[in-house]
Image (cartoon, rainbow, N blue to C red; front, side, top):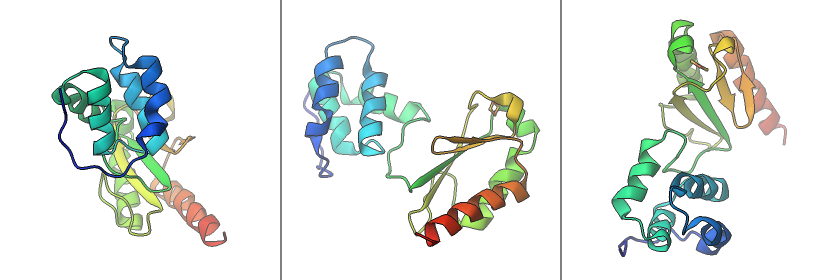
Length: 165
Ligand code: FES
């Protein structure tokens, strides 16, 4: 099915090796989307359309998967992506206080990016390390046993390092 969409200007050739490997394999849509997000940092609409065309899946199927899983992003993210867990263990151990501290310090809503493009903030389901709750990740780094003071220290540290560059 042909997908009618405006181009975001993404370099679609970057995705060709992934599509060459997976486009014809049933059940590989999530893998293709994961690779696409690694390449572009998020899932631009023209990339979604391109995947639709190359896999022969319907736009509804591809868009459905891209919007269903919280790991996928439809907007470009900041340099630092904060993912705060609000799964059961983290929720019970105070993730709401951590979220409030992040939002107040960075002036950013859940799903948003700071004006300087440095931080994006997302509240997500279980990150799989519940014994460390409350937990957040910033890019590849995991931070556990968080308190509002600890999270502010982490964020201020990143800002200071960035300002010093
Ligand atoms: S509930 Fe937060 S890591 Fe599992």
